[in-house]
Amino acid sequence: MSGHTSEKRWDDIAVGNKRYQGISRRASDSVNSLITTLNGVEEAYQQMQEIYTYAGGTDQLLADLLFTEDIAERGDSVANAAEVAKATDLVAAMSAAHQIYQAADNVAVTQSDRFSALRRMS
Image 1 (tube, rainbow, N blue to C red):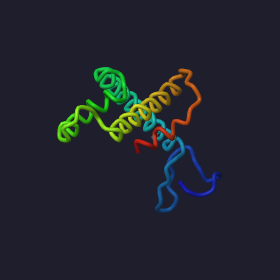
Image 2 (image 1 turned 90 degrees about the vertical axis):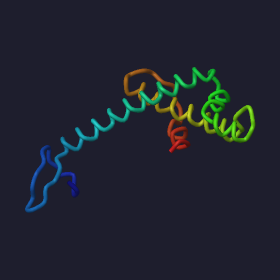
Image 3 (image 1 turned 90 degrees about the horizontal axis):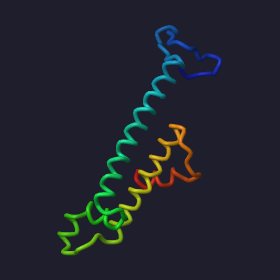
Image 4 (image 1 turned 45 degrees about the horizontal axis):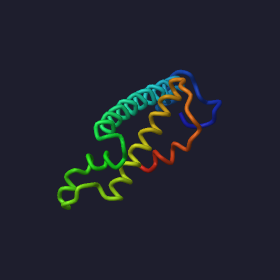
């Protein structure tokens, strides 16, 4: 429902031939979407952590794993600086997303500019 705040209603309403979504439905839909997103983010973070650990626990080793085919095509033995930077951005973004999940679950997290890390992956 657009318009002045005083025109908002709890339930859906019809005005003439127009139907407006009530604030309770809008809030419920938004909250459910956020919960679904946060749960998906946490699952992706856990998968990234598994890959990171499997690779050896460094950004370089993660990049070596993630870019295996590119490295082989070049005839190199390790990921280049640009590939390592991508792996670093991946780890930073997923860590930031995980910390947002933690904060939503009442876990204390340090103050940080998480949006900057997230934007690097968007």
